[in-house]
Image 1 (cartoon, rainbow, N blue to C red):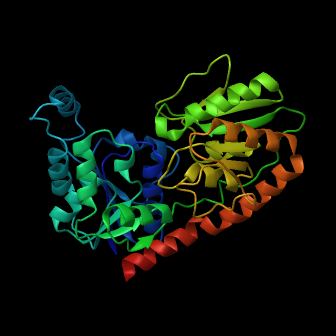
Image 2 (cartoon, rainbow, N blue to C red):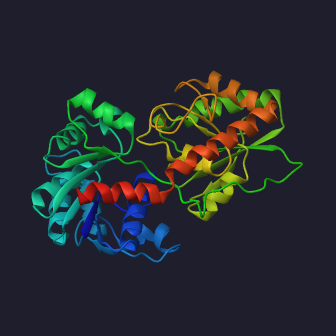
Image 3 (cartoon, helix red, strand yellow):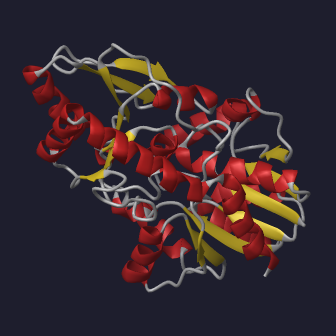
Length: 359
C-alpha cells in the first residue's frame, strides 16, 4: 500500500516523533511510505543522523525557503499574511498519488482534503484551541475537524474532548509507542544522590514553572537529590534556588539512557495530547509523577504512578518527598510502570495502524 504522511514541519517534537516512527515502521513492513512536509531536509536531522529512513522524503519547494519565511514574518498581522494558504498549496502540489493520505495538523488536513489524493485520514495529536491565543488560528483548527476525513486521535482524552467540544466522532485511538530495544530499565549507579528528571520548556501549559516552584521548596529542606532537565527548544534557565543540569535535545538511545539513570520522572503539563515522556520514563524504569490529561490511557494512580493536579506545586512537592523517602514504594511503582509500558511497544501500535488503513 502507498501511504503518504503530510506534515507541517519535520523538526524534533513529540508529535513529529510519533509520525516519523510509524512511517518508518510501516515502510519496514513492506508499505511504500512517503513523508511530505513543509521545511527543509536538515529539519529531520534528529532522525536521519540516527537511523536510515525506509520512507521517501519530499520537502515542499516554497514554504521552507528562507526568503519566504522572512516575507511571512514581515507580513504577520497584516491582511497580506500568506499563512496557511501558501503552505497548503505548496503541500498539495508536492504530494504524490497514494492509496492513503494522512494529515497530521490543521493546515495539512485542508491540504489532504483539497488534494483529492488517496483515502484521507486526519491524525489528531492535540486540541490546539485549548492553549492557542490566536482566535483566527483556533477557528482554523476547529474547522479542520469537520473536514470529511477519517479521524484518529492519539489518546482517549483527545477523542472525548473533540466529541464534547465539537460533536465530531473519532474513528479510532492510536497512541504513541515505545521501542523496547531502546527504552528499558538499566542498572542505576549506587551511592549517589537521587535524580529527578523532567522536560523543560518555557511554555506555560507544559507546567515547568509549577515544577520549578516545587523543586525550590524541596531544595530548602533537603540536598539529597539532583534535578535533570532535557530540552530541544524554549529552554528555561537554571536558577540558584532550583539548579538543574541541562541535557540538550536527547533523542532515542541518549534519551533512554538518561531516563534510566534517573529515579523519578515528573510530567507536570496542564494537558498533553499524549503524555509520551511519562510513558517513556516508565519503560526506562523511572517512577513517574504525572498529571492526568493525556496520560489516561496508561496511568493507574497509586499503582504505576503518582497523580497530581495541574498547576499544583504543593502536590508535586509532596509526591516527590514521599518517593524520595520511601525506596520500596519507589521501586514498586517503577516496576508496575515498566509492566504497563509493555502494552505500548511499537509492534502493537503498528498493528493498529495496519488494521485501520486496511479496513
